Image (cartoon, rainbow, N blue to C red; front, side, top):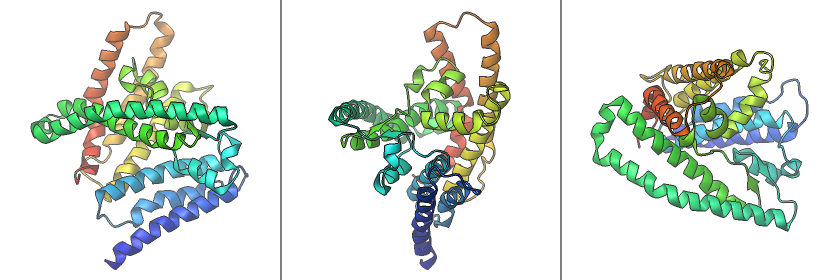
Length: 312
């Protein structure tokens, strides 16, 4: 019990150390860059006792998000300088994944509030469907016996759940006038792997990877090589997430890396084909084929995620 309580104390301490370091080094070149803050962030899940799955998942998500923000803080800081004007604004930027903009005038505040209300409406539309899908999980447990069927179900559950959380949290804060970029752009309508990963799914990660991975790895001169390297890094990040949530190497170790390597190869292949192929597939057919692609490859992703949420 004492060890458990020490863990619950140590995690916030690490978070505070990381935040203080990032605040002190925001936009300032340093020999060590952001790595002390990044290390403190990524260590947070490992000091917690594996007692509550929910806590482990939340802290692991925060660890990944704040590690990325720590790196960004040491390389220019928030895109809107007003978000670094004081500790309170910087803390808001630090904890919220999408880039934020502080309102410059009452008109900007009104626009942010209006956009926030539209996001709240989206949440209200998504939650009943999410609930229905969750009831399917409770009423038809046999769906988990078939990996591809389970993956198709999980695709929609994942998108609705994650996007509803992102929309809901940002919608609330936007009522105070702070604006936030969109994180998702209707992922089910993606027409290809490149469209999905580049324009529709988790745009915060996409923008971070473009700036800090793709371009430094030679993306302008060697786009295929840099793109594949980005997907390998994403695979490593997801392997970390699963390990941080479960505290052990599960039976699906390496599956996340396999999933992202496969999708990286698909995106690189699409880039090569686009140079030769002039006419794209019809929209509805392209969307259906991409959903099929995600469903077939989905077990590599949802197998490890099933271990993470096994206690729920």
